[in-house]
Length: 343
Ligand code: ASP
Image (cartoon, rainbow, N blue to C red; front, side):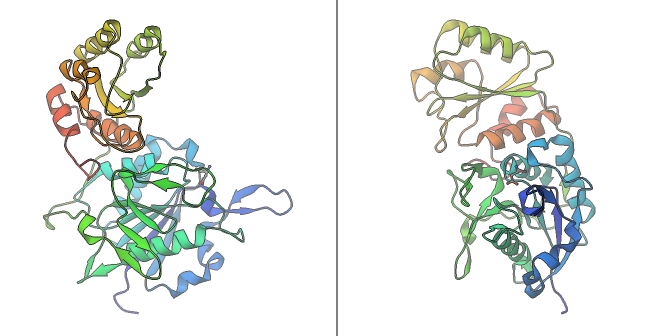
């Protein structure tokens, strides 16, 4: 058919592309170029699908920044040729990976949909088929000749989310992801319903796609808990070559007021380490200075993570550190939405 959208399906690894070896009962990756044989329904979709697979598919626990760049380069190299991209990865680190990819692409004007599954594609009760088929449908959806989605998303179990708003919340239910601070962009039921007022579109269609590839991963997540020792905080802040700390605080961004604790953080910030305050809560936002217990953090110049997820904060920090900004510019950029990741 003429003018059918073209979709590139990228398989990086994960359960979705596996089949059970019935002799050994072990899961193994199958040749992804034969995906249409496994899911003949794909032929009924109104689009042309091509596939590309990592030579050695990985479990997403082995995901790292080198693979982020590899995924970004596959999209970049094929950006003109295809109308949309569906990226298959394991669900375990999908929120981290898809958040990172969202920061790597500036002025994106085509859909990039991440998906995967909890059960392998050959399994009788698999969730892989629905996730894959609907992701492809979303990636090919158009209105007035333009793609409906022009951002990096994650589709799982009937819901399309902005990728950098998601967190994996369940290791066994099909509804494995949540986006606590931003509603779904689309829901799949009898109809595929897009919540168009929630979608993000590049304002200037003439703007060139920019792909950022410098990521600095010399960072750490420091999750507070009642009883955490000064020794632990001090040791983390003293890690050689450390560039950034995602400080997971309580509630609306609160932390112990103990002098020694604040002093260690203040001195780390003075040495150029960027520290971002992110809440441990699944939903809601940091409100710096709302309680006395976050006042001092504000005074020492901690960066306000607002309602960002930890996954997205890690990605945003890697990206902004890679841009080599001074302390003030880093704070300014971090505290504003760059890809719809915060309000
Ligand atoms: N362990 C797998 C992975 O993340 C689970 C999955 O595919 O969902 O790669």
